[in-house]
Length: 138
Image (cartoon, rainbow, N blue to C red; front, side, top):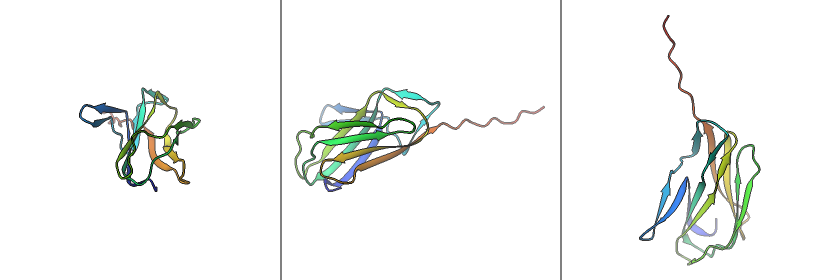
């Protein structure tokens, strides 16, 4: 990725702008999401992207979300405002509502205008394991 020295991505339930130039991320997921049953619907799913020490301006870009047994969701987004080369830039990508049909692998792909390779954030979607019952004595 030629746009920044370092790039971090975090998958979460919500991104909130706070007083004092702070951002709060709610419901951060590890490498997988776990559901009690599928299909399921979440009010929203967010991918928070942090670009550290940008090397050039980020042009308009496209985001694709691919999930198991569903058509990919594609969104074209405009150039982010208030960019400064050498500064940090945060992007919040929000899918609302977020419907998931079945377990498997999922991914966000962010295609920046001048890049041939997308920025990819992969995550798993799993069903919760049901606890085993102890055998009953007769």
